[in-house]
Image 1 (cartoon, protein in one colour):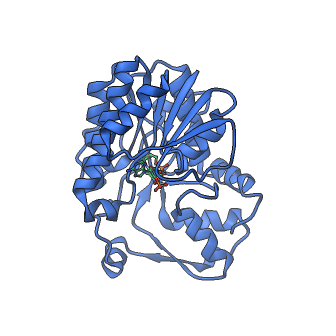
Image 2 (cartoon, protein in one colour):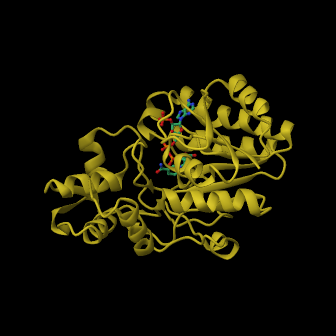
Image 3 (cartoon, rainbow, N blue to C red):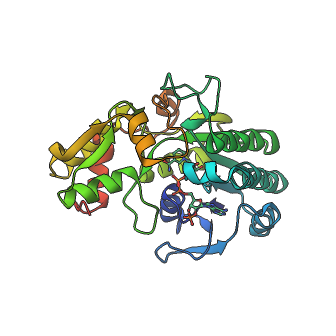
Length: 303
Ligand SMILES: NC(=O)c1ccc[n+]([C@@H]2O[C@H](COP(=O)([O-])OP(=O)(O)OC[C@H]3O[C@@H](n4cnc5c(N)ncnc54)[C@H](OP(=O)(O)O)[C@@H]3O)[C@@H](O)[C@H]2O)c1
C-alpha cells in the first residue's frame, strides 16, 4: 500500500516510518532534513504551514492511506505564536484532509488530550472538548477540519508521548532518565495526573487502525491508565535501576510560575482507552508493560 506519514522526524511519525517501511511503500514527510535512520522509504521535506505545498506533496504521492502525525507540539511556542500554531495544526491538517479527499485515501489524524478542559480527566471519546490555550485550540481546529473534509477519517488522540528513538525531540521521560543517570534531582509534578503513550506502541496502534480497521471518528490511542508525573518518574527510575529518591515532588502551579511557562498545564487531562482496547490487536499497554518495552528499546540504557 502507498502510505504517507507526516511528522516523520517526530516521536510517533518516526516510529511509524520504521514499522511500515519495507512492508508498505512509505513516503515520509517531515520538516527540514531527514533525521531518521536510512531505510526503505522516501523522504520529502514539507512545511505544514504551507497548505498548498502540503497538499501538492500528498497528491503527487498517490497515497492510499495517510497518518498525519506532524504538528507544532511545543505548547509554549504555540502560546508565543498562536497564528503559526493555527496555520500548522489546523491549516496543515485541513490541507492533509483535502488531499486525502481528492485521492480517496484513508486518513488518521493525530490529536491530543489537551482538547479537553483538563480538570476532570480521564476523558472518553464522547466527552465535550473545551480547549484552553493556543495549542489545544489549534489541535481541536485540526480535528474539525479532518472530520469535515476527509470522508471516513479517524482522529486518534494520544497524550504525553515518550520514546527512545535518537533524533526525535526530548521528552519528560527522556529528561528524567538522563538526570537520574547523572545522579541529579528531578522535579516532577505531584498534582498532575496524565495518560502516557510509548511512541512505538502508539505508532503500532495508529498503523493497525489506519490500515486494517474502518473505524470512523474520534478514538483515544494512548496507553492505559493515568499516573501522576511523580509516579511516572519514580517508575521510570525503578525500571532502569536508578535512584527513585532523586525524584522531587513539586506543585504544578508553583513550578510553572517559577519556570515562567507560558502555556497552561492541565491538572487532570488523560484519556479513557476502552474503545482502543476493544478494537485493536495492539491494545493499549499498562505502564509497566510500556516501561519494559522502553527499556528493551534503549538496550537497558537510561542515557
Ligand atoms: N508529544 C506529546 O506529548 C503529544 C501529546 C498529545 C498529543 N500529541 C499529538 O501526537 C501527534 C504526534 O506528535 P509527536 O508526539 O510525535 O510529537 P513530535 O515529536 O513533536 O512530532 C511532531 C512532528 O511534527 C513536525 N512539525 C512541526 N511543525 C511542522 C511544520 N510546520 N511542518 C512540518 N512538520 C512540522 C515536527 O518537526 P521537528 O521534528 O522538526 O520539530 C515533529 O517532527 C501530534 O498530532 C501531536 O499533537 C503529542
